[in-house]
Length: 376
Image: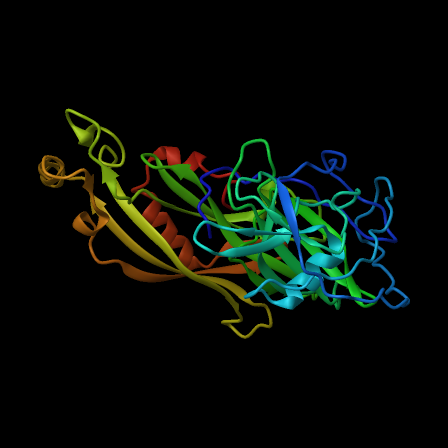
């Protein structure tokens, strides 16, 4: 996951469908924002979708707000080289499509703005337009997940969008749930300022899939705190209910710019320098009870800031500009963290709780504040 070093706030939970009203939690739909657009890329011809009877909606699905028109059915753009055409079918069904070519030659595709795609200018227009690399509102499609996210048995896709560049005052992340709609797709739920890049799907006992993963916040000297949380599209987002663990670290290549003594600043002024690297995440039913657990593999290393170690840091800073992690961290140890879904909350197993508690004894107190929600 791209490290944004910022709070990930709770945005909107809404519906963006032809037959149902749009729901917002904290603000009305935004108007389409201008973008830096240039030439249109080729499009593939696509007939209008077949008229089919829509599936009945769940009685307890979120609703409310003001209805808005159904986006027009336009031709699906052809995928640029290296991009899956299926992604273009998803995007071309719900939004105005753009592509961005980064300075390293990487091609990104996505929507020209983040959800909700409920006004002209955000609707599909049958084209894929080149977006300038400095654009502030481009939503690049980063991850795709299959499952039943709004109700049991639904055949749905979650599209996770991430802006290539973080810009203050602009949405930089969003997730949209889409479902089949005739020969195309329609948006049925969305969240803004919500990251789902690098997540795993985990099915609850009621047949609804959750997205479970992590994001992070922090700064160089103070360290970074990752927190794990679940996205549940069947409920309104509640900040204190969805987070279930934090994983901090403050191990970096540290600049020697603070003089006369670089050890007077964090992380050298802390009790320890800690590295907790998240190696992988997955969902798996470990105990065979029919409910999958959320499993995190981490690599843990810690260097205590003893007087002898700080003397070595001062010596390094006399001949080099940075103190490298490869110089001071011991070989990491691998650990498995397991979290069980109990009702609507994830709780650590006894073994995982003891491990996290033992690590916490060496954390600076400020790390307890670098998370949008407390642990259970």
